[in-house]
Image (cartoon, rainbow, N blue to C red; front, side, top):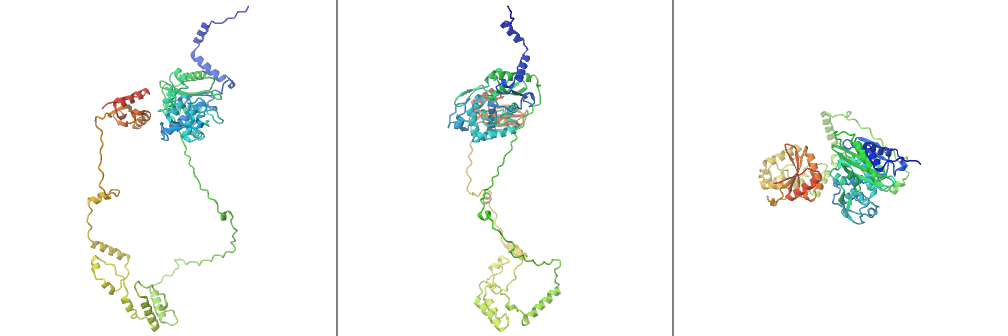
Length: 566
C-alpha cells in the first residue's frame, strides 16, 4: 500500500506565510509576463513612471495598441475640465440628454432622453461610477455630437504626446479604430494630476451625489486596500479585460501606473499593488520635480471661398480674329528735353515784332477772327454784339466804341484790405480801374492784414471749457450717490490660506479655491497681501459663520486655512 505524504493545512499555511513577500510579488509579475496571451482576456501591458519627473520605472508592452475600455473617460474628463477653465461652460451649466446618450448600455447613471442635468453631476457619474450615458452626454454637450467630440479628444491626445491613441467615442465601449496604450494612458493620468489639481480629488472619492442618484466608486477596492492610493480610473470590457490607471503617494514619492489586460478585478489590483510596491523601493526620496508641459494645440483656420457661377459668354468663348484689327499708329518720337531750343530775349523780341507786322499785312490772319472770351455776367449781350459789328464794318478796332458798354457793365468789387474798406461807398468800385488778379503771396498778406485789424475775441468762460471736455452733454451732472456699508454689518471676517512665494501663485490658489468653495465663498473678495514673509492669500468680506464654514470645507481637502476676525 502506497503512502502519500502531504502537509497538514496549518503547516501549509505557515509555509506560505514564511515565503518572502518580495519573491511572491515578483512571481506574480513573472507569471503575468510568461503566460501566453491567449490565456488572458486581452494582451497584458504595464507601465510605471515617477510622477515627479516622468521617468519610466517599469514597462512591458507599453506601446502595444489595445482597447482602453473606460480609461477613455479620463480624456473625456480632461476635455471637460479644460472647457470649464477656459470659460466655455460652467459646472452648473445644464446639459440636455439626447436619446443616443440615454440608450448607452451599463454601467450607466439612468439618464432619460430630454432630461437636463448640471455638468457637475455628469462629471461625478463619469469619474466615480464610470457611467457611459454621462460620458456621452458630456461629449455631446461640449462638441454637439459624439463623433465631433471624439475628433477633439484625439487632437488633444496628440497635443499631450499620446502618439498611439485614437478615440471613436467618449465612454470607451469597444469600437473599431478605438485604441490606446499603457504608455499613453499613464501620460494622460500625469496630466490630470498636474494640470487640474483643483478637480483631481474627484478620483479619490468613494461615493458622490450625481444629482439623480448616489453613486459609488468602481475603484473603491483598490483605494481602500492600497496605502497612499488616491486615483485614478478603472475600465473593463470583454475585448479589453480589466484595466486600471492608478496613482499613489508615499512620503515625497508619487507613482502613476497603468495595467492593461487583467483577468479579474482582484488579479488586476494585485498586479498593480506589486508593481507600485517594487517601484517605490527603486525611486529616490527626493528628486527635482519636472512638471509636464501644457498641451500644444494648433489652431485650425478655415478659409471659405465664394463660389461664382460662370457666365454663358465665359463658358462659351467666341473666336476672335486679330488679323482684322488695324495696326497701331506709330507715335512720333518725342524730342528730348535736352535738345529743345531755349529762346533768348532777342529772339522773343524779334518774334513779337514779326507778329505785330503780320497783323497789318493783307491776306494774313488778323486778331479780329480769333476766338472771343466769354461775356462777363451782367453785360448786355446785344450792346456788345452791336459794338463789335460796328468796329468790324469800319475796319478799325477803336476802343471808344466799346467804352460806353464797359462803363455800364458791372465790375467785381475788389476784396477789401482792411475793415475800413468795407465802409467805403460801393459806387467808387464801379469807376475804379480794374485791378490785376492778386497773387498767392498778396492773398496771404491780405489775410494777415485783415486778421490784424480784427478785434480780439473774448476769452472763453470756464463753463464753456468744462462743457467741451465732456461728451457733448452740457447738462448738470447727476448727483454722486455714495453707498457705504455700516461697520457692524457683520461682513468683516475673512480666511487666510497661508503664505506663498509669489503673487501669481497666491492668486492662482484663490481662483481655484473660489471655484470649489460653494455658497460659503460666493460674496467673498480675493485679496493677496504683500507681507515681509511672503504673499498671503486671503478671502475677505465674509460673515463669521461663512468664514468658519469655508475653513471647515477647505480643511477637509487638506488645505491650510485660518479664520481672521475684525
